[in-house]
Image (cartoon, rainbow, N blue to C red; front, side, top):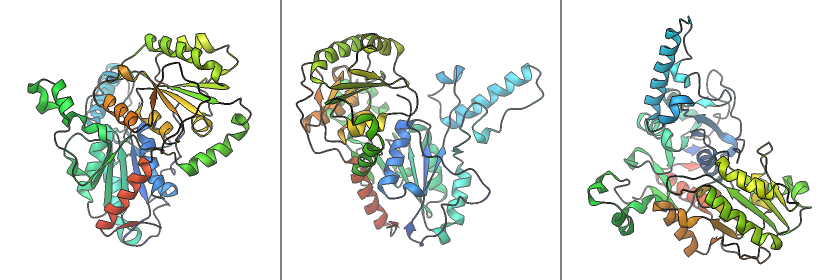
Length: 420
């Protein structure tokens, strides 16, 4: 599935961005989001900022890794070391070819990374801005998500702790006190459970994180944060009305992700999914299928071959506009592959039937996530025997709004509050 287009930040200019104007000393009226370039992570930060009422008062920065070639084998490195290594490789390549120019400055992420429309996360710049504008504009909320953003977010808090409130989304694995708040799913603490301890040899226990249970500044959620709420669903339904309203009902939306180390699958799952969809097709008015940009070709080919010419089935071709939000708003039921916590969490925020495909292939904390959802009656396994016309419901997951409420409480303890 092609990433959803994120809001464009203001163009880099000299001085402080326009949104950081006005505000009381103890009122947070602006936010900085530290992203990593992955929509699944960045949408969590944007969703939280939106729930706090700061959607129109935020600037998106990114921590960017070099991509392509050998860089795909170096993703385990800390991002700062990875950037320096890539810079060195560029220098070697340039001088070995006898060129008389040098690569782009390292602080801009290197010549092969970064987006012209998004500011590169610079700790010194953000810290300076937070300090210099504090008395006039009040505190700065910093929200980061993803492993590559940890060092930047923690450095901002260390250098400007009196001027910022730093929230790290997704578990940073260690030293949680580097942040004012950590927001993470409960299943990230699965390694501490007796079931998990039994799965790992004793001599490896000391190397598995997290090592400590959550403390008072950790906010636990069931799933991933996202941008979907009732207001978003209403506006999205109106925006996509002309395309979706005429479709025969019920509308079944199928979201297909990609295999991960905790949920492995390939052509075998694609064949099984195809067979199950064929069995349920008679109870559907319309089926709309979307692939992730990282869905393996061997998976997508099998499904395309079977359904490309079926008049009931529409398969998104990856071209803009991305219909994902329209699917969320207009679907009567969902089938989602078990690998994606984000896709599942978004679907479960609607209160509509959500069927999971391939959960039996998942292990470790992802298996624990599915177990929690089933116990709450939020999801059911997709077996191919479902009648999609028979609906069922549950209290929608509301992790983002609940997390935002706890953020407000934590700010109040510090004597701060988010603008009304």
